[in-house]
Image (cartoon, rainbow, N blue to C red; front, side):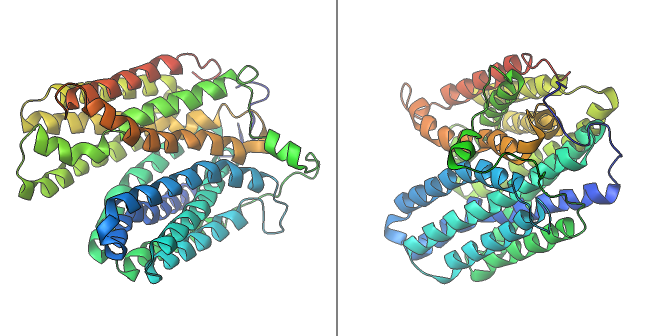
Length: 415
């Protein structure tokens, strides 16, 4: 660690297992609520409200939500950094954010218009990302560095488990009001379970006085002064791109390249997703613990990228369905290696203890951008040659991931 990358708990007392369990459950509840809508329920609700223009409407609403999420994370993080409430620095944003997000989902569920769906989804993204920013900030504030690999693994496990749980909730409740509000009610309960007993501290009294210029200027972190922060952001962006960009096109790939019958695609995708995310979650927990034991982070990122690259290479060249199953298993293991140390790596290069929430919000933007850029680049790559060129698409994604293995080696203050 450098002298400027700080946290009050670098070598402080270890957090309890109860804290880690509550943190993991908070992430699980929050991401399950968001992903159930983002992956399934949003599309079903738009189809119900505007069946004639559902494709265009979904693209517009999803893009607006992604833009709000991109801006909300660092904004809410910065505001929580400055919060001096008697309820603490992070607690108001944890609980207020998840309640606001639930209200946004209620608007989507109860008002049958595209404008209401768009407004509700933007509000939900704004508020849920405020909770995500505050939740992430509690890790460097509460967890000592020697435990962060284990905590990162638990968080990674929760995030991966949230995908099948979110999809299961969406399938169970469809686009009904319960489909929006039951998962979010669970998120409210689990975030409250974490936030209420949290030993939350207020913002320091000697912080720089607020001004619009100071506030806007705080969102810039000079990579020349804090190069490791910049390299961690770039590594996360590249690795997330390799991990998430191919996911939305799996069903199309199966029908186009593997010639899976239409009636079998949904079952095949569900099985492949279970293999991927199941192995990812288990690997994240195991490797997070191992990372703390050996005191290393970067080797796990390099291993993650290599597993991802091999998996993507197999997808690019596979000629039979069994190889696709092998590829998905490798992608799951690779994602697990990365999620095991992702949060630990980010928290160990933060430039300033006064800006933990904001800086982690900036880091989190590297998660959102690949989800926006991937769908924009995919049609161009798929159109190479005779069209439906999944070989070009997966090979490009593989190269992007391999560059991530190079960028992580540039980080100097973390082993």
